[in-house]
Length: 107
Image (cartoon, rainbow, N blue to C red; front, side, top):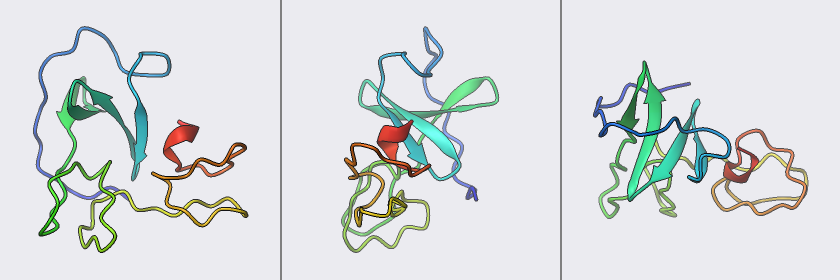
């Protein structure tokens, strides 16, 4: 499920983000965000948008990277790993043979 967030178009890109582009990919809700020169971008209708910023009181990170332990932001990426032997969040999972479809290293 994707939440409606502020539409903030990022600067133009010289390449298309994707597997092998050289930027870390992070699964965030129903899309993939790419870490790029201090920004977190997602593809949107032929251009890239900036990822939403966490709305927690003590956080200013992007929702794709937020790791607040008491996060109240509905758009943040705190999905739990679905592997049978893992109890970590998808953003922190390091399972060698991860079978979870939402873990960031499975992208």
